[in-house]
Image 1: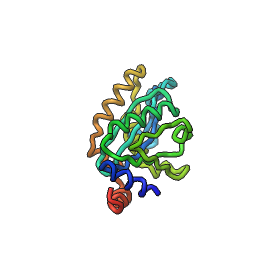
Image 2 (image 1 turned 90 degrees about the vertical axis):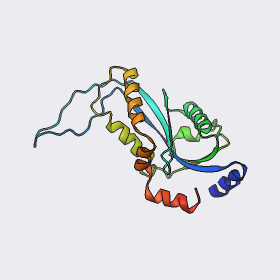
Image 3 (image 1 turned 60 degrees about the vertical axis):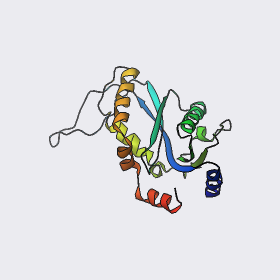
Image 4 (image 1 turned 90 degrees about the horizontal axis):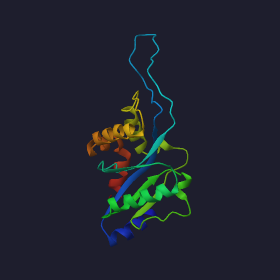
Length: 188
């Protein structure tokens, strides 16, 4: 069914792209992680526990590393609707098959899916099947033990980290062999 829809739509336009979508929350609460210490010495570091946060919505293309990220204040269907419209405009020349999880806001009845987007929901309770999860791990690893004073400073840190992630870096993280093989079999 999905391939039939994509082929039918492709005859009207052109390129078909497979993207992976997800969201992550980043806030002022310190992201801890491993530190190098002497044997038997427990690592320690300064932390802060503020609960202000932002959400980063993102899509990545495993084949090329092409990506699009956008910041929102909430994780809900209204923000997701805006994000879909932005993604649709950014990749306006393509039909987009987007893999995403089963979040309630992804399936909200009031969503209006843009004409060039086909949503493909992954099986429940298996975030590991979505390669963008590794992008969030990579992003958060660079933010470990950072202590931003406010959300503006956090935005700067996130922006710097995202700028470091060019197409090649992203493709190396999300370009899993089995996904690339499947895409080549179906001609995407």
